[in-house]
Length: 161
Image (cartoon, rainbow, N blue to C red; front, top):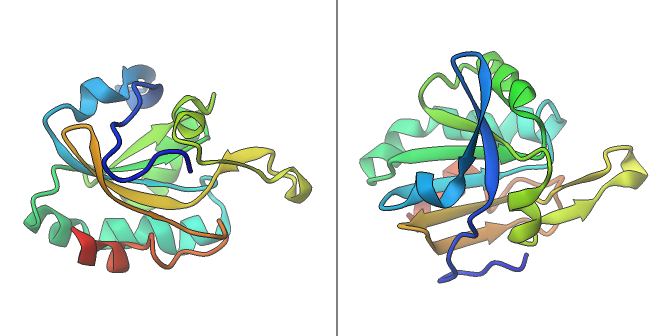
């Protein structure tokens, strides 16, 4: 990844679903003056993402809130419709903001893009979790292998918050 601790989040356009329609947001505008956790992953409905990464943050939502986290954001290179459907399937409700980065604007800006074409997935995001406080990355954990979810997992990352 190009982004490091103490760097500022790039002002990329991403998408969220609002009232059944995709809505483009500028990530800096959304994160300004907030303390958030962002976790990025290779793709909605993929095995490790569905079995561990997303469910971990859903299950630990209250513990993160108790540590002053205002939002938990899940971002993937999928479109906002897919992210929304995947979130509903995992009962994220208001706990996790499901963000689509279908054009890899944010993913490429932070240097998290990885080519998974050999596995039939195309260009995806590596697996990571970051703590962002008023646009500044204060903690960052990136997995060496996107198929692994250890240091970026909710139960491990919370120790850094």
